[in-house]
Length: 414
Picture 1 (tube, rainbow, N blue to C red):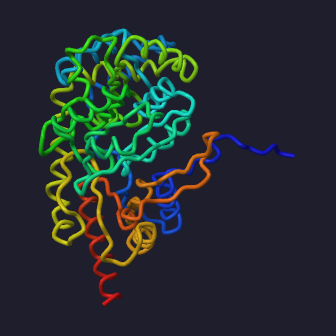
Picture 2 (cartoon, rainbow, N blue to C red):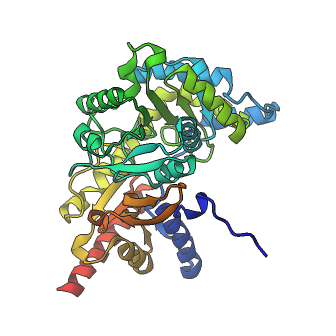
Picture 3 (cartoon, helix red, strand yellow):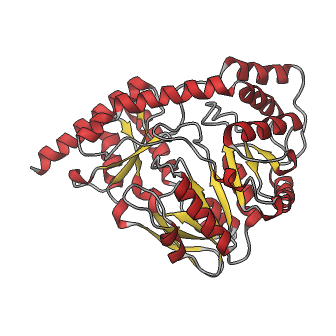
């Protein structure tokens, strides 16, 4: 007899991202034609030739052995310098750890900060993986409200915090909304966290994809704070800025030495070390970052500026996203909820989008950290997410088909 599983992980729902990914693959098999994939945040452009060459050269030289759990010193030094010059963050090699993708870095950081019964504050419209990772680390997610422009405010966060709150997560530019926080907003959130004795996690995966305003790293506001008193832990990735999604490479700048020492132990248990050839590729990427990140941002912004305005004209999108790779559409006019819309759009038009309610999941957790049930915020039932980092032709054709489908829904309900 197979033993029953009663772990906390067993109770965590699968992400909406993976559900639509599997559905799109099945649709391709059944229909025998390519699906227009507007559901995946994977860019149509590739890393620079210097990045690929560095990876291949490392393999050919036999640079394929373990590195330390912290990552290669040369890559950490390059990342520290990048943070100093580009982000205004005063980090140090001793407080910077390399990870196999920022997703794993986030997971390790959450394990580093977790305490029994502790709560983490997440935005009510969030990247689903943030919720999953928090639950796996042992945190109880508490969701804070966003305004009509998907921005948080300190008062709404303070209203849902409790004595068990230990961590505030900030994601700017945000996935899935593209919202970018300004200096005043970040200062108010940081002040609240400092007053309450919280850690702050700043997920800055889309740092180079800002179109309407400059990106501000949260930790840059702690430059004048003694290292031992700093509270902001920053997470970065090579996946977006350098189109290195399949390389799996990221890094975490810990706020202080204590947190860095703890995360080293977490990494020892989880990964042993990050891919050595990928780290050589990362060194090359950072060396040429000024040119590559500007070029990549220009490509995605062009997609945004050319392909998304028809969605505004159709009343599905309020305004162009300020940053990131995604847009949240309101398809309420069709009379369909987000899951039905995504399913029928895939079947009828061969276009894959992500149901937006999955970004507004509300888990209910018992005293053992298990999810006993979950629901979705009612206001998200008509939202869907599209990625505009994809091939321009596919993006424009996919949006065209989406608009056709919306019009057909309008005609049926007339």
